[in-house]
Length: 180
Image 1 (cartoon, rainbow, N blue to C red):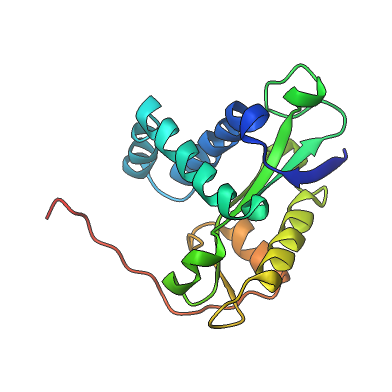
Image 2 (cartoon, helix red, strand yellow):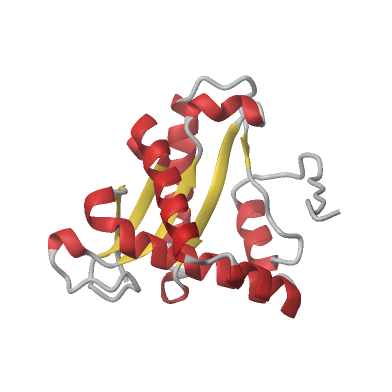
C-alpha cells in the first residue's frame, strides 16, 4: 500500500478528514478506557461538534497549510469514502499540528492528533506523517525546541511509536471535570 502526503484541502477533504477524526475518537474511547470513556467520546461526535472541529481545522490551516497533513491512498482503498477522483481521494491518515501562534501554550510545537487507518498501519504512513511534523516544527519559532503531544498511557501501540521517534516523558497532564 502506498500513500502520498499533502496539505489538507478544506474544499475536497472535509468529509474524509472528519471520517478519520471520528475513527480516531472512537478508537481512543474504546481502546484506552472502559464503557464510560467510550460512551463519552462517542457522545461528543454530534453534527455541532463536526462543524466546530472543522472550523477549528480551517482556522489552523489558514495560519499554515501544513498544520494538517493528510495521507492519500495511492490505490483508492482508504476509508475516506471517495470514488477515486482526484478531488475526492481516499484519506488514510492525518496529522494535525497546532499553528506557530499557539506555540506559547506548551512552549513547543504541539501535535494535536495523529491517526492512520488500521489497514495502513505498519506501512510507514505514520512515520512519514511524523516526518512532516518534524519539518513543520523545525520551521516554527518556538520558545523550546521541542515537539509535545498527549498520549494515553494505556495506548501501548502509540507509546511504542513515539518511543521509536525519540519522544520522552515530559511532565504529566492532569484533568478534572467541569461538573464538580
